[in-house]
Picture 1 (cartoon, helix red, strand yellow):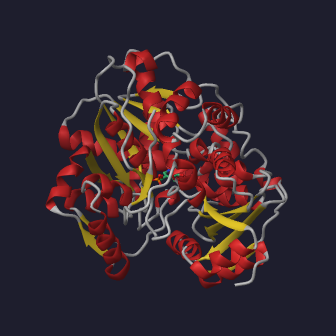
Picture 2 (picture 1 turned 30 degrees about the horizontal axis):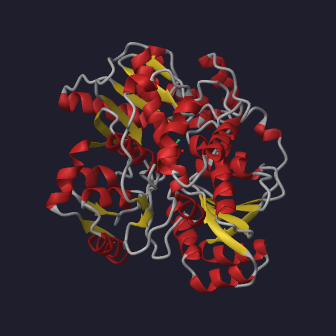
Length: 498
Ligand SMILES: *Cc1c(COP(=O)(O)O)cnc(C)c1O
């Protein structure tokens, strides 16, 4: 099999293999690594139908990580998708009403980021070994809530790796915060930032692109890497469950092999839905990719107009993991839309940085036909949770509710009856207050932790181990900093002065 190479979205002179792309995380020029070609499905869909999650994961990932040996990749997959997940199916598909919900929240932190972050540490270690890197790896991550905990879980006690997580101090749920600040492991560091998610993300990007500091780290035998969704080692594992849900749709006779389906994806940084787009490009029969936003509806505007305009206030919503104004992974879509014209993309990204806005060309807009963009207001999201619970006795988390709300709008607008999978990205137990008060305002008087119990009673679903008694766990991380102190905090933790 021939190798897949990875290149920056902003210039194409350098090509690297997957190991290097995974270790580096982001390109030196600030661009993101993209595969030079998207591998095509070379088995019939019928042949995939009997595969379990791990087998399918190997089939899909081996097409991208071509410099990993078969045994190495299988080992990574086996270590990731094991009994950390509370179901051997890993990603079950649950039919409710006229949609099928792809539940991606059965991992250790009960949100979909576990799908990628349970394997990334193993990919990273293997990649570093392949490159003969004997340095200490320091993972720097900005999180809007879910990534941070999932990364901490993934990297805890992995030898030769430290992980530092920055989260917006007032931008995550109580339970999310507790999940992070109670994290065990000598190699884990969690820092609250007095700013929003975009501040955290920009701060981390600035540290990555600080050449002088990176040189200094090099002298100290340390290298930075990222666990954010910009890492190709996170993106690729997310492609797997699009194939897997398709197979499950076939196996349960919802569809015939070869039929097209829609996916509705609650979107923030555009990583999850980009993985779906890659699956489509690889040959999975997908009709529409429905991109669901909350009131931070930059992507809704972009898909409908071709103009990306971040010049607006960030709103804090009940779906905080989607409170994002700059969707980093969109840059990768642009490469697919303009046949890899790097200079054009660099100009657009420069414009986004300097002016806060860019517009894609008419030619590129045509490529957006694969997508439908919609958004859900806060009230609509609350109503969706209540309605779905009353009709189906099924509790949606706030992010999944955004997706379902947009799906209903989509059906009204298009009359499309194509079978549809709603990507369910978090357990409702992660956002108890918002979910329970959507059902009934009376729940507002309880603490988030009391609401965990109430939710279990109401939904008759057992409390996930990930958050059981979380309020009784010992707090291990109390550090808080200003946005402009992030760099010095890192310097302090890794003991290399700025
Ligand atoms: C991260 C996250 C999202 C957004 O996914 P992107 O890949 O950033 O678009 C949606 N829902 C939940 C629960 C998340 O944690």
